Length: 527
Image 1 (spheres, rainbow, N blue to C red):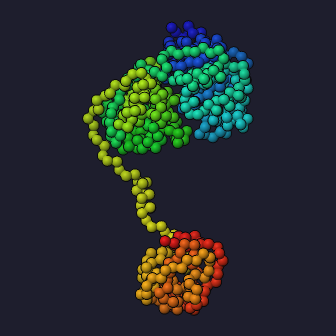
Image 2: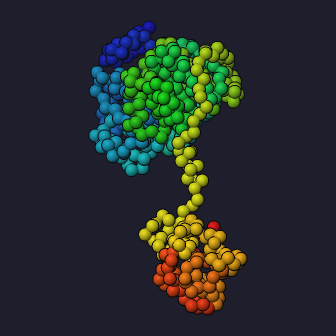
Image 3: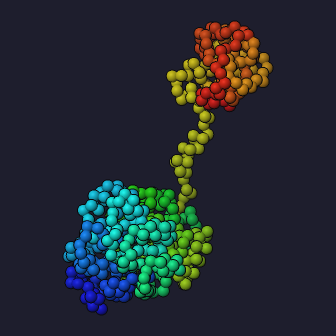
C-alpha cells in the first residue's frame, strides 16, 4: 500500500520519495489515518518501526489548515535532547515542501537564543519537560494555542521521573486538543497515564508488547569482566566493524572504555549526560560520518539516536532495567534493515540476562567466544597513584607552605648549636622534648586558656635553643598540646643555630593573649 492511499498530500509523499520511502510500515499504516481524522491515539510499537514519521506526517498536513499563529500549534514532548533533535530533523525533512516553522528547546545550552527564537514564532515546538517549564516560568512561551499534544517515548518519561513535569505541562495546555501518546514498551503505568490524558483513544499495538524487532540478530558471549574490553576490541578489529554503538551502564565506564579502545587503535568517542551538548552533537556527527568507528554511550543515547543502517550494537554491560535492553538493540535493524546486537555477559550479570530473556519470552543465543588476546592486568589509575602519594606524605605546616614566615614560626625550633636541623621544621622533636642537656622528658602541661606559653615560673621562649647560648631553662621543653597557644619568640638569634638568644629571664611569663583558642598555624604543628 503506498503512502498516497493513507490520504497524505503530494508535498509529503514527494518528501518521502526523496528519502527512499515508498510504502508505510505497519504502525504508520494504522496511525496516520486516525491522526488525520482528529482522534486521540495510544500507540505501542517496537523501536525502529517508524513511530516518529507516523505522527510527524499527519501533523504537518493538519497544520496546512487552520489559522496561522506565532504561538505553537503543536507541542511534542520528548525525554532526551537527542530525541528532540531527531524529531525536529524529521519535521524539517518531511515538511521541506511545506510552509511551517519548527523549533527545538532543551537544556544543556543557553536559554537566550531559544527565547529569541520563540519571539519569532513557531508552529511546531519540540521540547524536553525541564527546559519547557523554565520558559513557562519566565513567560517566554505561550501554550494556550496548542491544538495537538504529542507525548513521545512515554515509558522513558516515567522511568526518568518526569510524571510530575508532564502534569504541570498539561495544565498549561487548552482543554480542547488532540492527544497522541507513543511508546516502545507498553506497561500498565502507561495505561494509567493514558487514562488521565487521552479522551476515547484509539489503541494501536502492532506487535506484542516489549518485543524486540525481528530483523535484529541477537547473540551473547560469556566472558570475564576484566576481559570484556579485549574481546570487544577483537570483535571490532577482526570483524572489520566500521560502525558500532556500545552501551555502558555508567558515565565513568563510558569514558574509561573510550580511552581503552583508543589505546587499542580504535577511533572512539563517548556520549552521556555529563558531556556538553556541543560535545554530544560533535561525537554523534563524527559517528554518522564514519570519522570514528565506536560510539560509547549510556542510556541517554538509547532513546533518540536514529542512525541509518547502523549494523552493530554491543551491550558492554547489561542494563539494570530489562526494558532498556529493547531500546538499546532497537538502534539497529530500523526501518526494515538488518542488524546484529551483541551482549558481553560476565558472571555477575547472569541474573540480568535472565530478566531480559523473561521479558522477551525467549532465550538469547549463546555464541562461542572466539580466541582473542587476553588483556593484561589493569594498570593503576594515575589519579589514584597521585592520591596515594599525597596521602602518604606527612601533612605540612603552614610555615612550610609559606617560606616567608618560616624564619619566625616554623624554622629554628629544633636547631642544634651547629645550625643543623634535628627534626622536620614545624614539628616537635625528641630533642626538643628532652632538652639539649640530656635531661629526661618532661610531661607537657596542658592549658585551656591562652597565656605566655611555658610553665609558670619558667622561661616560655626557650624552645628550640638546643645547645645554643640562650638564657632559657634547659631540659624543660614540653610538647605543645592541642588548644595551647605558643608564645611568640622574642630576642635575637632565635632559630639561628649558633645564635645568642636573649630570651626573657627565668620566672617571667609572656604577655597573655586572652582565651582566643589556637591559631591555624598552631593546629598545623600539633602532632
